[in-house]
Length: 468
Image (cartoon, rainbow, N blue to C red):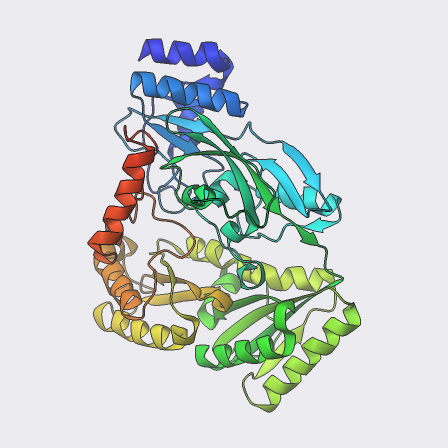
């Protein structure tokens, strides 16, 4: 492999071909620090042409490629296995905002751009790029596209797939497909764009994208509502959609235990209520008319929900600082759970109407089989996506509990399947769920996916061991 690495150095510069173990370490370990792989090198091209040149070398020398953005994934999709045969192809140097078109309401960005950088560039142009998630300060657009990331605004704006109009992709053969079209209508055959979005780098490498942007809302309002059960949260969702229509941007469910964990590990973060309730919903309205109009909608919503006994209490943020404080409660749930210790995560989706039944049924089954387990249930109720996480009993052995991960996953995933859901809503499959998905997809569906993989990556060099 010395010839291969030397040609990589010649192609993109020796400084961008990293082989020192200590310098590679951050690229080889997953976000949760649960797995560390090995690699020949971490290669950092600085342009689409350099990405293509490196991929052509990988074809010539039969070297597998693991594309990587911010390495914030949770399913081992962006780290290599332990064979040491692959390179990690880091895209972080492809970080330019190429164009902003405020008339077409699009922006063209390279895949290594940090999500927050894209949000800020849109804001500087008087526009909104609505994709928002906890890792937005470190995740990249390429990773967001490769996993079809969701986040908190899917209810109004859709997943990343819905926010993308066109792509630039380096194929598995090292050719460059320029599909950077800012078109909302283009009915000229197979939608190649959608093949690469959500493919987790197994079909090719996304190097740039044309993204949709939107007018900045005139007002954004945040409120926290308390209620007895997830079923009441679903009732509130129906009322909110009726009263607020497309102004309803975010609708996040959080259990009492979630927020008690946040308060335990971040005691300066407190709920705005004098007592605890069973469930909470954090909702956000984004209005293009006026702040007065938004306030009237929110006041009407809360009044009706209180009158119908759907909610027990509500607090409306009266400043940007208060709004940020409410969102911080939601965003610190994963951090608080990590501080609490080892846990088993599930990123699942079920039809919105069945969420209450799913939580109730699956909670009972887990308690029956694993007494004392603690459920950390939160997520994007408005689009049916739950982070349905399981923590060990309070005084039990975390390691002994984690040893049952396979059985716990089976209980949860079987329940998801019975309720007509998906075992991966927004995190992807990666290596973590690659075998698990075969329990729930038909053989025909898996074969169709394998056919696409074989057609586009016949040598199997693109992120091997992931997805299919």
